[in-house]
Length: 180
Length: 203
Image (cartoon, rainbow over all chains, first blue to last red; front, side, top):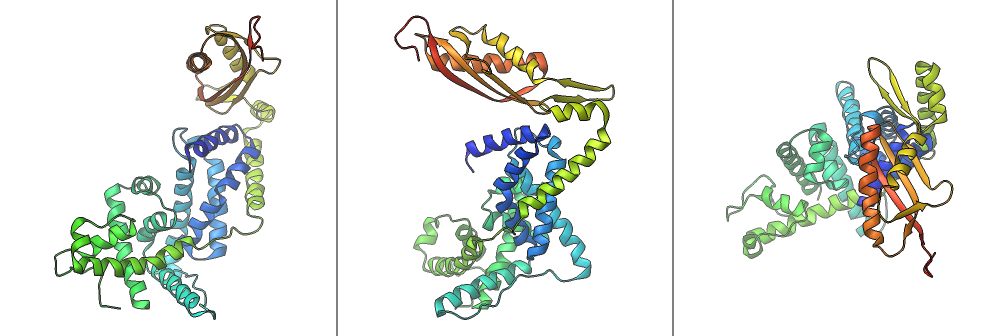
């Protein structure tokens, strides 16, 4: 996201705060991909991700007043989305195992099949992470955030981010290695 | 595949985890890691593992159909409910839009966008090199809760640096608006539409 994008977001937030729903709709369009992807990677289930992403935008709309004008809207939205995902995962933990969205590798040329198997192995590895490990892992590996941004999203220190990410990477590396 | 474990240490003393971190963060190997046969072997193997992670990360994710529509339906339902809660004067003002709202224990303060526009217009006359506001509607103001977006279309005096005049306009206007209304100018675009004075460069 460029500085121009951030500036445009800020202007849209100003308009949305004044009650302009069209401006908010533009924000939803601009950020729907990252929000839904984060929810899907955290929850591993399309319907749950759909619900969580919708809920995140609704909370953003209601909480626009608490958004600081000097912050990045994208980072703020990641934080809301992540909190919603962690809330859902905490509720799920008592009732069922973490769901995994592992597709059947299916048929196809040998190389493609191998690639799909590796991706499935990664997904299984992700499902094996605790929510606390999975959060920084997804933000880093999938969303490409910096350690500092992750710390902001998760409201923890950079040191804590590094420690959790480190454990998560060990788990993933091990899962992929064993699948081969 | 070798039995390389990510939580182990290589014969040269390097922790496998340390290499993993550099591979995952797309960093270059250290000088030792480049020269050491144990490290290069471990590096290659982990880089190979991480190809799967990259493939996973790059996998395209499609937002469900009608997602934006569903969100906006809930947003509209939510704001309709809050308008009912606020009621009375506030809801009337909100419908007209573009008024800033301050709320404390004592009451509410609303500022019309034209108040901000008046401050902008007055301030412009204090800037050297400014000639006049271009046409009707030359000042556009959008007021949020505590922030304001301003766009001004101006005609300048010919002969001075446009960049300097625009910079002066931005600085002076932001200061004055904040001083007078307490609102923060988050964006101030200046559109120069022409030059004044009897000159062939009139735009």
